[in-house]
Length: 475
Ligand SMILES: Cc1cc2nc3c(=O)[nH]c(=O)nc-3n(C[C@H](O)[C@H](O)[C@H](O)COP(=O)(O)OP(=O)(O)OC[C@H]3O[C@@H](n4cnc5c(N)ncnc54)[C@H](O)[C@@H]3O)c2cc1C
Image (cartoon, rainbow, N blue to C red; front, side, top):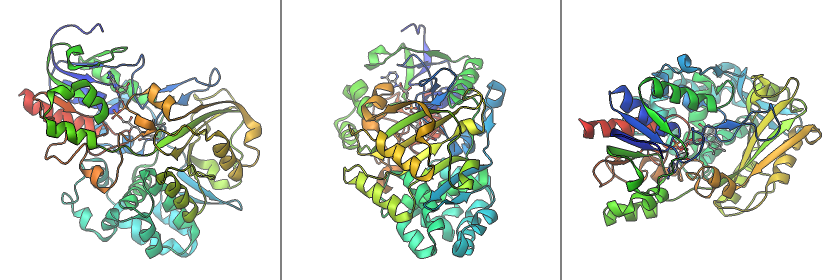
């Protein structure tokens, strides 16, 4: 590693949280360096041509409602550093057998109108929590606390603490509204009859209406590159191929912020912690993993349902019961025959992603943590179900199982992309119950990854909040 000199703070890992932490420290006049173990920066926010030349695939995150709404990212001049957000005409479509689809548009009224018998119920649920975008971003993407905001007391917000099944069975009659909600709730990686799965359904739906589900032009790497460019403008330094195996690998500094998950933190710095804190880290639970596929296509996906052709993201899984059954199977350690799939088709709206007339598709499904099962056939069959002729368009494809993902980014323990399970307990108390979750018992050592509140997703808020704590120590 080439990092030399003395720093006020060193950040281990250049994921969105590591870069956010470095930026907040540098904005406050601190001399910072970021040490990244891989040869490219960005952690879960990287893109590359991994199928054929000219086809740019997002290797990790693809769609960024959290990144776009993030109070911290919104405060930064990222557009001056090359970031350009692309908003597809509609954020999300959720097709059903027979060629229909529920479509989540920017307008609550238009979304509701297409939900048949549930139009009024959908408006009643979403309108109270969607009419103030700033407060929503702060509530969902800031540090979670149900006491912090009056929104929590509103009737819709209180559903956040419940499970998705209870919500849809209490409020909706039709499959369109139920299925649409199921897809968003399934982002939780939880069984849909477990809380707080409803919170994820509400959060992603609300963010879709209030902010859209945009993605960076050119690939998610463009977001990491914009953060790195702004950091460089503030005087921050980034070193790649700099794997940190122990605290002794870090150059002289007063504070170290680790953009890693508890298991790695134990390996790197465990000897500096109290036994109680070490045990807390050992008890930390990881969630299900994912199986990911990237496709280079000879044309756009031939969706049966028209609504899918305008959407940046398409959720494949059919009815609420089918999505719930798939997620239930994963939680029992099984591999569903018809998995719930999150699919993004950025090249439809961003011509920098593929050669003229060609397209990319990004897709993944949930699998048990550490799974070695190859889901290629089941993912392709599920896409084909809603887009007959899809397979004939495949020019090239790449699949990544849980071990491939963890080799690519050591934070993806067993293929868990959220830095740890996000059930009711671990969503609020991560990595363990503590008044200040970012500090460790070792003075000057912090954790700033998605294994801290507010948890998984590209929003940088974990890094920002950890940096605020470290700044108090550095005063
Ligand atoms: C396939 C996939 C799809 C996803 N889709 C989305 C999406 O569409 N939208 C969304 O918002 N989120 C998505 N996510 C989740 C999102 O990418 C993560 O929540 C986010 O990247 C977490 O940021 P982080 O900074 O905490 O950690 P990471 O982004 O994981 O970064 C950690 C960094 O630390 C480095 N590192 C680890 N150990 C060491 C060490 N010992 N020494 C030096 N460096 C080290 C790693 O190499 C990595 O660069 C997805 C993730 C994956 C993998």
